[in-house]
Length: 70
Image 1 (cartoon, rainbow, N blue to C red):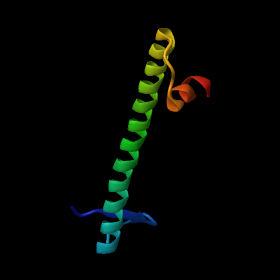
Image 2: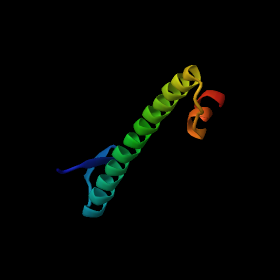
Image 3: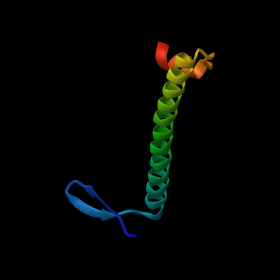
């Protein structure tokens, strides 16, 4: 896919190196977004587990305790 950038109002086609760098940047963004979503999901799971364990009188893991203390 041909990509362009604007430089002083002029549309310039990406070089091969710029294409490669942009592809790597976009791939890393996908990885970062998935890592953030995973962290949010894990925190929600730990919080739900902590609540259930507190109600049942069971011991919490450190991660579960952190979700309700911090």
